[in-house]
Length: 215
Ligand SMILES: [Zn+2]
Image (cartoon, rainbow, N blue to C red; front, top):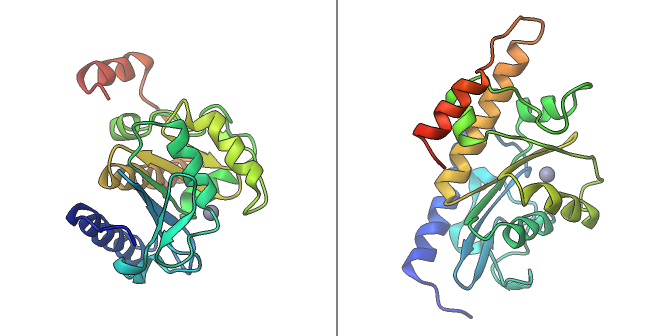
């Protein structure tokens, strides 16, 4: 059994806190969704068939860099997606994947731009997500989905899986969580604005944000 540092203990507790907060607000339900955090000696991932609202920090799966279970309960069947993100993004320290209602609704719409699904409606969306490509549909658990994600996630920290949900990487667990929540709220705004004439931010306004808030 590998030693557990204080840092790892705190991260496990924080995963459970975030999971409960997502569940309590209806952003996840049943056993849907998974959260992972990169450590210096592997990574943590929420267990398969676990409810994010009732995570036991001590039973969260710990995996090595190849995805082998080191301790804890068996990991989510979507582990390969998280591994694909960590292998493609050296700076990613956490990954959040949800089946959150509004993001999934947008992922099912006909006619969305697969290169960038949501318009730049607000400054915070531009700063936290910016670009959101659509990854084509794959059956749940299909390893080909992991390969498909690699192509997109290498270029942007967030992707939307068609008819499935978002996958968001962050520089920390909090960072990934807040970006996922911003995405979900923007998907909700986008749906509220269907059939309304909207005025997204202009390219000049987006450049101005990037100048003042470099990522
Ligand atoms: Zn999923």
